[in-house]
Length: 159
Image (cartoon, rainbow, N blue to C red; front, side):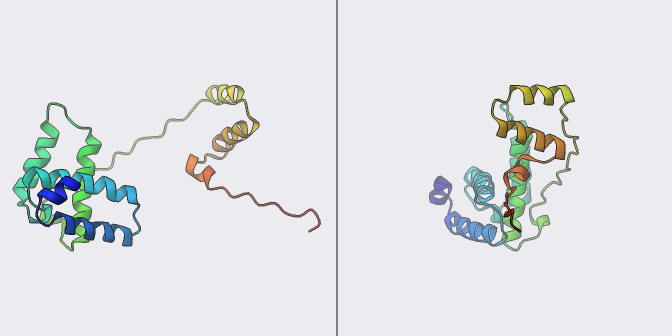
């Protein structure tokens, strides 16, 4: 991002607006870092702001991403598109401005552990708190983040 800020005219200002708008929309710092890294790579590639690019340049860049011999993961491609979309949104430009492709959501079923696998995890956990966490996650079908956000409150016995 520093390189893009110094080599691409106007990128530093665009990046500041992008960060401000992402923050205002309630997105995390990591979202900004991720999206801006992809936007910066594209700006460096063409030596111009993504908002000033021709839609054909964008298509060529996205095609090149998919065709590289050391093909980046599909998530790299997706994050480039998502970063550009978010940039367009924060700059007040329509998605159709750069003719970005639609990225279908892949619905995949979660992997579910068998009872035997859970039993092995419970038996190998040494600390009681780990056994309780495993049982809570499995028994209630909670995600790790949901368990981390649980707040325990104690009540007085006198009440």
